[in-house]
Length: 177
Length: 305
Image (cartoon, rainbow over all chains, first blue to last red; front, side):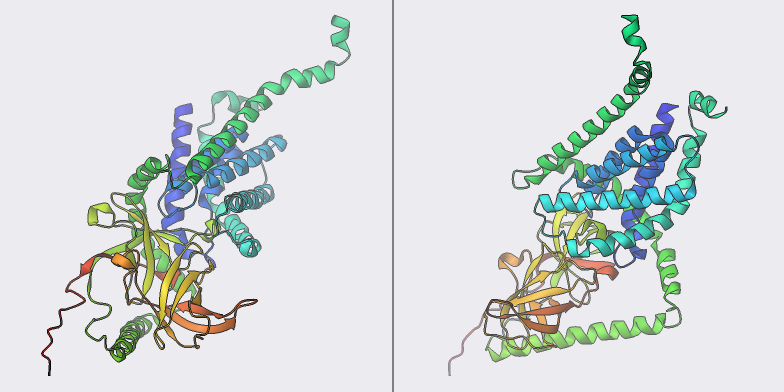
């Protein structure tokens, strides 16, 4: 069961990275694409908790760092998405009495976008990457957050439903009463 | 002993019930963050040959074909986008006009440039000669979130593409190859902030440098080497080429001057360039993989008088 879950999560991340780099960039809004990988990471974190969020974020971010169009220092997206995933997992834990509502999910996505984009820009600044442009930060963050919420409406329920199907029996029992 | 344990029972329960889980997830977080920092530190020293390179190679090997397949699904996405823009009706006409325009612009830039060269008694050099080109398709584009303007193309070392090769399309200069793998290559677009191209003003032949501004439209800044020279609005800029034709071959149109402003606190002026190539709409590109099909400098055999 655990192998199945890990396999599914890996599959989600691979598909997300592929679609994000080659399909979604063609419907970018002012150059900003939907962070499908971040959305999948948040969905995994919301369904499995902070450890999963952090590890899935690390794996997904690492893919974004090394898959072709990327030319920045590897590890930047990995760090950003790992922390965003961890925080998203914590939010699920805080609201563990019931499933996180739609508004909660939307806010988590906005928070995740803000955290990951900020960390990515900040690490770039620390490494003296000349391409980081803080004057564009606000606008791009705004567009990205809005776009990600739109993407999350479709993706998060799907991922969470599938991950819920392969929930371990121990957890299913705990939810029942 | 037992009495001592009795009073802080509440705290003790919390301390025994939660910590294992909390400790575990904090350990995971710390490990992941450490892994990230290790990666960043290892990869930041680019000159020393990054140990992340093999990872990039492997990722490109796996994701190249995936991206290639996924971009085949682009047609419906493109159609959707066009429908949203209500351009369906104008599509065919637009295509045709764009193509005509491309041809005419190209003729114009090349002939203008050639005329200038002729004035310098250098008309023996045919500018922008027909280079050997490898066609490629864009299969991946970096988002604005990562600030960099890079794209993946589906041609790699197997097709003769090497780093520091010029990439262009029908309208002008696209960028240069910065990274290659077996089947894919990463192209740094001229609009990236890390990109600088030597550019020549068509009208006066003055030399300068075109650097990317990093914005979405791919706007460029142009600074002339000669501080007294002033570019004019509407001037066209072509590459002046690098030695050994790498990374840029000469004579490729870059863009047109849209505004000129004097440098603050320094001599000279900076021109804003609108590139001929729209960075959001590049699809088929050509990589200059070989020398011109014919020698650019034919021998002159003097006849005397």
